[in-house]
Picture 1 (tube, rainbow over the protein chains, first blue to last red):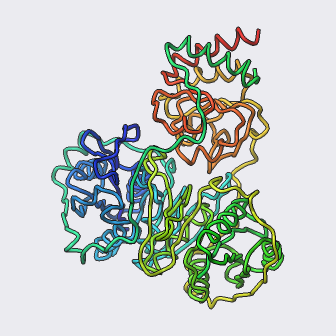
Picture 2: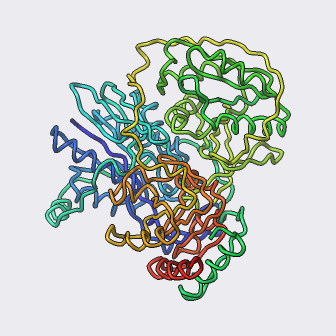
Picture 3: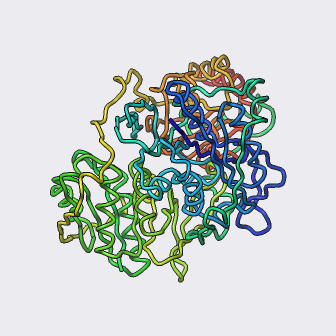
Length: 260
Length: 325
């Protein structure tokens, strides 16, 4: 079974973000980047499915040159090869391409591979639109399901466990090829081994440009500006050493909020 | 020229976010000077359509078909594509639920549009609506606009609009039977189920101490357990802690776990991603302890300590013991 995993490189989760001079996106100068967490789980699921059923895992990533690092890490963990849709403006959020534009490029790169299954994370930690996989399925004319917790492969089909709200789940069956967006935590992530890192150096990374994939689509969505959120609540912050702050907080909980 | 609100139901039960989405529809339609219509999708949704028709709306569409009895993204996308083509709304609103996330991006793609997802506010600035949504796990907000010929598709975050502002009225109900081809509905869904009966009912707790990624290791959990014990609180967690198996899933608070509203909610080492906030922002008093002063949890907190939880939590235990002795 041939599995394509669409992965994205995003800033580290605990980064401090500053708005850049344009006011429309973040200043990326001092940021470090990593694989989008739900995509890491998608990659792990693909590797486990390959171990069980055989086949090939291809990592697919749209991003600027720096995304090569994340792609190499995917190869080190066990992906067989990779496709890197490389363009500098893929780093600047919706201001250059929106989710439809990115999904169109990913689909154009994925379709000639004729994959049995496409996996990706349910959403990205940066834009958080949560739509790329669903749009790819529509563009490629294949069925999809989202927020997946388990994948069982059957003859030419899959049965998946989909997470619903409030602790409910549902099984869904569909024919392959299909697109699934996976939920974080559906498996246990592996670390790259030294051997894996060594092997990754010889694995193929095919670089393609948006132009080679039929060109970028003019965006439908534009970001006018980004900014820190306005506080909806007055928060009393206690500072100083832990003991002083704790004493002040308990004082407030007892005599102001009157909950102790 | 109208605003169309897609209501959500399952098995004849409303999703509670349907009403706040409808309230948002009324307000945005008024700002645009357009009528607002609502749609209920399923099989045998007459009674639900009747309930919706008691709101101030121009029309309620009962979108019915045998193939819409069980939800599928293929069925819903095609049914609503037909309805949108028939009614030509300028704006289509959805509650930002798991179900909406499953089909609305597909629907928008059919109109060469992109769903503006998880919106927390909207402004009418002459040239059309500007929508506010969160980026970087809630650390930044952004103003987003849609262009293009098609209708705008927008999903609204839980709690961003208030259902109690919904205006009553009397609307006409119209049936709409979309043409659906069974061979085009490729997902075969089985009935929803729960994993196991919940042993822990966090919703009944008056005090909750909830722990997040900041705890770093499972072996550090006693630090927050001691705080919970001192407060007589139930211990809860954000999703990553339960994913890692450090605490059972039944102790998870958030969109995929339990929704709680205790008297006091301590968020310890929880940054406050929206998936967590929707599960606890109704708490009466929220206390946040986090080393990152910019963590979104401080946006909803009443009291906060910016600091190392491994120092703050033990200090709090001492102070609570003194205060309640």
